[in-house]
Structure formats: structure tokens, C-alpha cells
Length: 356
Image (cartoon, rainbow, N blue to C red; front, side, top):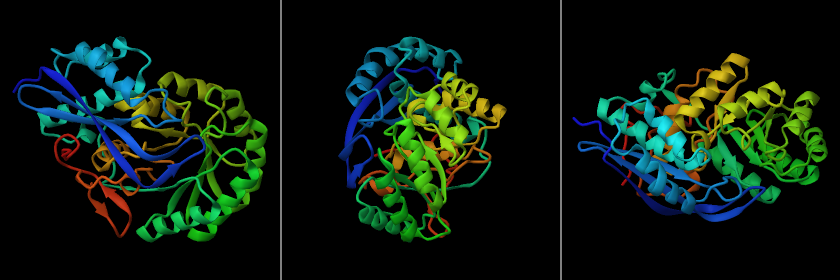
């Protein structure tokens, strides 16, 4: 069986949200994805990638161009197991992390299929057979967010990421409404999507702390590491960077600056290889972490399940909630244990399933 990468293809797909998605930066009714396929003469590996407006510095159009014109040609003709493949991708365009991550996801699926092994066995090994899921509560009026959270609670969710934006008063009202809807035993975290100034973030922390908030994700601008550090030092609510954590170097800077109580990892922004480096740095520094998502489709969620399976002590339930937010009936749904609201970790080769 040949391991030589023969070609790479990219397909754009569009999926509607079940209900409009909104955070502090954007409102969307549909989301565009790329399906990346890497072929050898005998096998094919699949990856999925999206670039969310208001979050990613890349677009689906720029990722398509980067893959077709640069990343694909950089690795065509190479052995899929050659350790230089990741280096070739890094050297092709150093800054296009999302496009590179999509290619890398397809590469790991290909490796798993060639070996007949699940990806989690190739990236450190699974330490659990199921992955608890947390729900995402999109930004809306307090009443609408309470209804959204209650709907997810009825599905089985007991951990919730609540989107907030910009000011303490509206944030407190939203968190209060969600807490009332899901009860005292549920775990709540909030995500500011970099929409707060430092002073308003401080006021917001004080306002929402009585509602027992587990952590505050990315309250301030991506560039404001000093601001994150100020919020960490206040020690009112743990601070978890997201948008400003892409590379291992970002992880080092955040740790050295005292700007993180935990990390939110995402395969979309860091890929498999860089995420593993970040995990190693965080482990060495005693920083806990969990796995977020970019609202992947049913198929795209599989990659997150494999990565989450390798995290020994996750900071929070994996936010692999895309299949409930995006209409994607054509893709195969990962296996769910409805009694515990947990994804079952696949055991088949690669991601364990193929997209339609």
C-alpha cells in the first residue's frame, strides 16, 4: 500500500444554523465549511475546517487559496508518515493556521486509515471511552437565552458556555436568566469573545460571580495580554484565554505573563501538532485546559472527540456541541450516550467515519 501523497482536493459546503447564532462579534444564519481530502493511490483522509466571521483571521476563500496554491503543492509527493510533512506545511505559509490545521486533520485521518488505527491511538492514546459534552448558549435576550439553555438541559447537558458581550449589566441579566433556567447544580461559564475593556470586565466579574461562574473566557482583546493578567490577579473568576491562544509560543507568553488560569484549545486554530505542544507546555506549568469547538458538523466533530479523548484531566466538558446547532442531516452523527450526554470515542480507523 502506497503512503505517498498523490493529491489534495478542497470542497466548500454551506450549512444553516438551527437557530441564528450570535456572539459578541457576529450574527450568522449559515456557516461555511471546507472539506479537505488527501489522497494516496490506495486511501483517502478527510479533514474539516471553518473560519467563523468575527473570530478567525482567515476566511473560507483565503483558506481555499492557501490549500490549493501552497499547502497542497508543499506536501504532494511526500510520504504521509514523513516527519518533515508538518515542517513543509509550516514553511509553506507560516501564518495561515486555520488552513494548515484543516490539511493536518485530513493528514491524520489518512495516517489512521493507512494503519487501520484510530487517530487517538496515534496522538497519545485515549484515556477515556466517552467525552462529556457542554452546551453553547448563543447571545440573545435573557429570556431567549434561558429558553435555549433549558432546551439543552432537557437534552442532557449539565455544562453551559454562556455568550455575553461588552457590559456588566446585560451580562449579569443573561447569566442570571440562564442560571435560573438550568438550576443550581449545572456548571456555567461565560465567553466574552474579546468584547470587554479591562475595567468593564472587572465590573462584569463582580456582577456575575454570585451566580457561581466557573470561568470567564477571553474577556478582553486578543492583543491585551496585560489586561488578562490584571483580571487573573483579581482572582474573582478564573480567566481562560481562547482567541489569543493559537501557537505554543502564545501559550508560553500567556504563562510567563500570568495571564491564564486555564486554556481553551481548538483544533481549528491550532491543529493536532500545535495543540499537543500547547498541552505539553500547559502540563509542565500546571495550567488546566479543555477543548472548545468551532461548531463543526457531525463529521467534523469526530476530530474533536479523538483529541478530547487524550486529555487526562479536562478543565471543562468538551464544547463539541455543533451537531445540535448546525443542520447537517447528511453526515454521520458520532455515537452518543443519551443517558450521560457523552460522545462515545470511535475505535475505527482514522476518525472512525467518513463524510458523505
